[in-house]
Length: 121
Image (cartoon, rainbow, N blue to C red):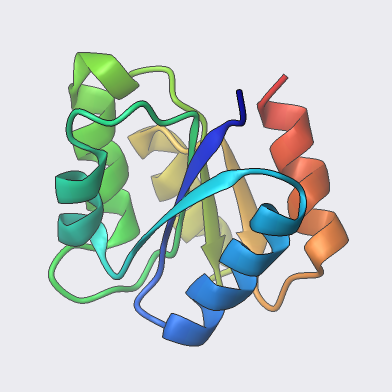
């Protein structure tokens, strides 16, 4: 059975690129346009990993991580930030919220896949 990964980004082009990269490797992909949309789509779904942007309308990536971590079903789900933010303070905020990893955009598909394979062992 293939693994299901949720990609959360307010940019349709980024979602498409991530989705295409993951689909090519056999992953099932659920797309969401912000944290609020993601919570609705993740609720009750079996999800193996979440890849989220940081800066989004309605609910940003940090708040999404906090809410997922507060939910028993996703307490240990790997969550990787995929964002243009590279400041240490933001990375520390993401880590304290419960982010598993951090990838800075723009990303290379091989880089994304390497991180996914590492955290989805």
